[in-house]
Image (cartoon, rainbow, N blue to C red; front, side, top):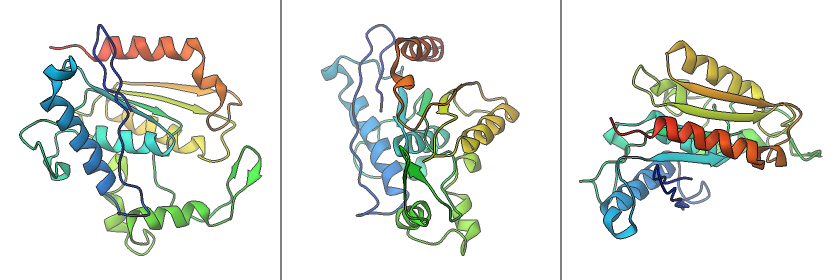
Length: 219
């Protein structure tokens, strides 16, 4: 995940509790607390608290998305430094699931089949309940629930050859952002697998830098 200054880019890697110890939305609360901590120590670390982006890959991409779409919602600001803002100005999501998997299905990683219920079991472990049995409650765990006209810009990238996180979710999420007039840049990388090296070439780095330079502007 990223903490960025427009002239001199600064990155902070955020740790958060995993689903084997706490349920949703504890992970969102942890990341928002990290941003509040960084703002409280902005002078010490030499960072600009007004120019902030968040990014992540895979599960981290989903979490970055959830933090971004809940911008301005104080219900997830739990713990220390609550006098500080947890706002971010842009989101970078590398092949993260836009929607938590709610159906059984077969997945694979680099051609290695995973157990049929793996994705669904992970979802239940993260949420702490079965989304099929509590659909109304599950709706609040999906990013599209929070999207509105004030939602911040998104940078999305996903590979068409991803067999772990289906690209159809990113396609649908991009459509929802567009329908709500949210600025979005979406790169579908042909044949790229989950965590494929195609995402880490200089061309993608330059696209991200251009996106950040365009979106992290103090108005």
